[in-house]
Structure formats: structure tokens, C-alpha cells
Image (cartoon, rainbow, N blue to C red; front, side):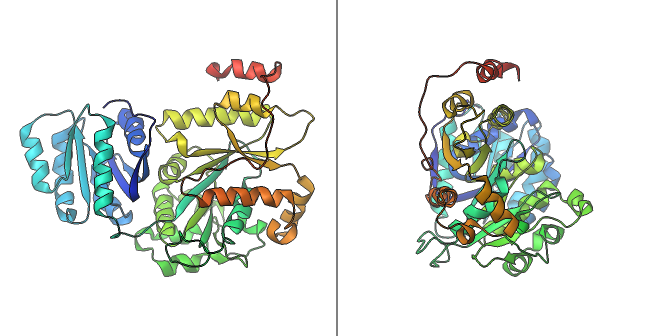
Length: 425
């Protein structure tokens, strides 16, 4: 396969893709090809084709992408019956280096929609996905936007941002993008910090059920089950809490988590995720289906260094970096902080949103279990969260920073040393 280009291609609606790939070395490139197409989400990545039928039952999808190598004949032996049984509502695409005509005929008889020989130009796959999206326009359910919020270290204010941005989104009037055509969007928070999640406490909420109950039977999830598991806040936000004990957290798999998130997306216009907190299989599943990812950083060496590592790991894994937005927390202090221009130079990205430093207001609101909408509605801190919410409501999830900072020449000293050591991190 050729190297994926940076230009994005859009499909007319969300296309959910299940990938079957037994070649681990091909994973980043496959992911990069798919996620470079705006509107495409990878709802499952399967290494063992024997699990395909179960995954199709668990994850709703419009497209099945089969990487047949390194053993195309063996792969087709397993997946052909599964494809044939679902060919009327699932577009299957195969790719391989094998030029055997019999293999192609067998795939087509099973109901394979498209067959690509490697290497192929990325535009070829994009055109196929566009065509499938256009054909299915209006026939499938529109999904809500999924926005994970994560930080490279603790104490950056991730949960504060999650809860306040969700509350602000729920206040948007006459939001025409809402699939339910309601006056305001339906907004959900999902707390993926399974061990120490505090999103419910930040909203003074008392959950009765948690994500653990939904993970027990992800293939049977429906609207009623999801609604029952949510705790409802007076702002209009619904919250799905983490497990109540460590043992439950240990039993939740990445596949179960992805299944729940996919189901929640069908019920809400925005799904704001607190996490992921670790770069593990669950995190990779979340980044696969994210529309926009907010990564929080602070103007200190440790979080900048860790953010740099996180961004490079995401890029190496084939994730679409154009879906990443950097949020700088506690902006405005003078003493001991790095200059934002230096941070942008090191990370190679703009700090798109700046959260002002107002520790007293923020901490008091947390202790009261109240969003800033209720506790400090006129504060600059609340205005910064409003700006993020408005940006997320745009189709590209972009926006300008909450406040401006000067563009200076890079400074020397400790931070310059950090920038100079990037390659050795």
C-alpha cells in the first residue's frame, strides 16, 4: 500500500468499519488509510477471523475491511460464509497482494463488494468509502459526536473540562444538527476512569447503575437499557459512571467498552468521554471511533514532555492527527511557566484552547459539586468552556483559543533543552 496522504476526504455520513487483520505490522497503515477519511470510524479491529461473526453481532457497522494477507486462502475459508450471510446490509472490501484469480472469484461469489490489490493508491479506498456512504445516505441512523478528553498526566483539569463543556453543550438553543430535531442537543458523559473516576461527584450526582452493567450484555443494548444506566443531571446532561469497585473494572474488556460507546452514540448528539487514562487497548478503541480528541496540557515541562510522547505514539499508530485539539489549562500565571509559543514549537501543534488560571473558582465549584453555569456563570473560566462547547458544535470541531498569547522567539534554558532532546525521549 502506498503511504497515506495528509489531505482528508469526507463521506456524506458516518461510516462504521470493522477491520479484520492478522498482520500486526500492517495495522498502523490500515488505520491511517481509514481514519484519513472524515466520517469514518473503526468500531472494531479483529486479529482472529474466527471472532468475526460475534463482532458483527456486537458492533453495528456498514463496512467490513478484510486484510487477507499473510494467508488469503485460510482467511477466506473462515470469513466467506459470514460475508455471504450478511451481504445484503454489509459492504465487504478485501485487500491482498495475492493475484490468484480463483481467490477473487471465491470472494465475489461470497458477496465481496470490492477487491483491492496491494499496493494501491489511498484515493482508491477513499473513493470506495465515499461511494458506500453516498449510497447509504438517509438509510442509516446518524451517530452523535464522540469526544474523548485526556491528559498526559494527572491534575490537568480533565474532569473539570469534561463536566463543564458537557453542561454548556446541553444549553445550546435551537441546535439544528440534533438528529432528534430537539431544541437542545442530547449530551452524555462517559467516565472511563474505571478506578478513580469522579465525574459524578463533580456534578453532585448519585449513580444507581454504572458502565459495568452495560458491559455485561453489550450485544443486547437498547435505548431503554442505556437510559436506565444513566444518571440525569439538572442541566440536561446524562452521565454513565465508572464501576463501583476495582474487581468490576478489571473485568471490562476493550471490546465491551467500544460496544457500549457505539450504542451510546446512537442515543445522544454528543458523547463526552472522561479519558482514556492509559494508552492501552481500550484507549486505542476509543481513538478509533473519536470524532475529535481534546488533549490537555499545562505550561510545565512534565506534561509537555508526556504530551509530546503521546502525540508521537498516536501518529506512529496511524491515528488521524487532524482530529486532535490541544487544550492548555491554568493559562495566565507568570511565575515559572513555559511560554506557549515554545510549547507549540516543541509539540508542532497550536494550543487551540486556553483555560484561564482561576484555581479558587474552579476548586470551590468542584467542592460544591456544581458546574460553573450554576456557581460562577459570569466568570472567564466559564466563558472558556463555553468557547470549547461552541467549537465542538461545529462540524469540524475546530475553533480559536479562548484568549490570545504573544508569538515570541523561542526562549533558551530548560525548555530549550527539552526540545533538543525530543528525539531521544
